[in-house]
Length: 177
Image 1: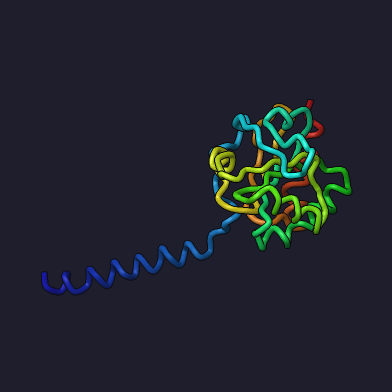
Image 2 (image 1 turned 180 degrees about the horizontal axis):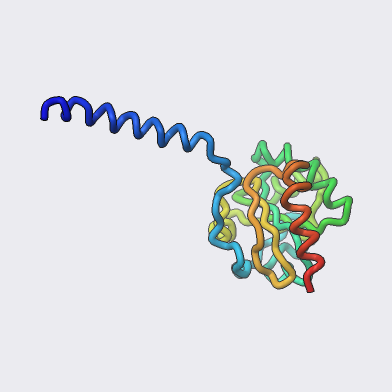
């Protein structure tokens, strides 16, 4: 019995180390999303760009689009931005949500770096992001023609992400009737 009291903490510690080690090898971009297959929640976001109409739920639908959450304070968004600019130049429809940011800062960010968005709204409170299950920025959703979420990408979109996952799904969704 005394031997068991000595071995139990060692075994518990070993199991705990194994759980932590396994967690280190988990891909953070594979976070499950509660929104897959569901319609985008209703929202009506104020404009980021002066004189613009902002972004609302009704703007998503009719064609597959990317819905990209970004912020002026986001370092990873800077790394992702050239890819979004390239995709937009290739005709990929992208809408933006400036998340937990001042609209002036979000607009300045777009002026300084280029604006890949058809429409962009400000989610200063983060409420729309909460409703979508956003865990941080950048985060991008593929929205289908019916306004349903079909895919969630956590982190900056890379060339590999586009060519292997996001691009093929967008092509497939465009081809669907």
